[in-house]
Image (cartoon, rainbow, N blue to C red; front, side):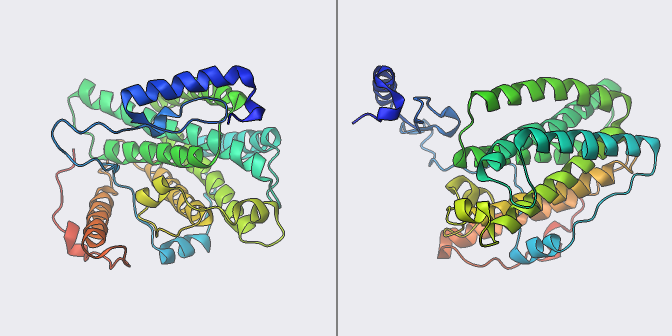
Length: 334
């Protein structure tokens, strides 16, 4: 029986969508507004090469342990601006953007509402995925243009961009993006791509410092959300404490099957603290310095591989840290 909230005019549209999906043998989610969420689409058709269908992100993110997350929760360092560029980026992020964003979203750090957070997270993650891709693209073209190696920066920047995009997809599994939110996302992207691209072209360190400060605010935001969810009597404790973690998050961070949304928020927090540290580090380096995070990517890949192997053989289990010699061979950084 059709949902009365949708109105009778929506029924033919839903019927036609379902008929189309059935014809194409495609499954997915249809929202209450009749929109088919294609970014979570799965096909029933057999793979032409007989490959087993199982989604797994090929760009491996760090798999956080509870101890690592707790350690980062207990320490939220901030960078003190020193140069004129640092001060300009600090003012732009901490004073202009952060306070304006709080005002627009109605976000109250002491006791935020679920609605203000939903809108905030979708906008935040859609914007956060831009700088890494812009910087990676600029360095890619620079490497081609100058006929020189990049020394490993591109890989870390692409991983950052993909990680932020995954954050967005996780949030979209929990919250719907309305017309105004989508408009804000488009407007923000058009604005940020031009600004960030020009900044990286003229002064790469300025962009990394900008992102470093941006990630400081993102880390603080997720810290506040985790605190609110776990504090009885708050708006988020009432609305979010009972929510289960979406499967996409469980797969991405190799989380326990019974994980909650609050556990996802802690992983989001940990990721943002990592981006904070990486970009503040890049802001202090020369453009042709070797990327110090290459070995970390290899260790993350080895850790995820070991966890996957254990789960396939014995089911979900506690991970035992990979010995450091797993990435002992120094790679040729390109």
